[in-house]
Length: 73
Image (cartoon, rainbow, N blue to C red):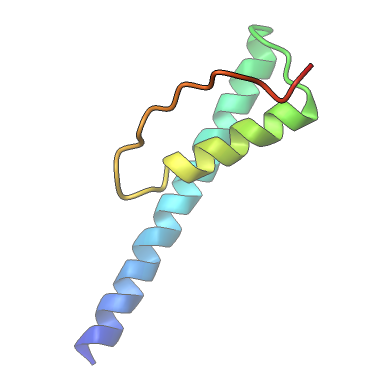
């Protein structure tokens, strides 16, 4: 029974983390759109959302990566 309780608690915590991450991503996109700081096309917006959703709810600190090229022309 203890394992089941731990699994349920872990699942609830993950759900809370994901909901928080989704909220942060929504706020970031809204602030970028409102500030006219950058204009993101749908593809770049999707990449940003994907990257943030990988990093924000994760258990470990992200490892910085330096991109040396681009897929955009």
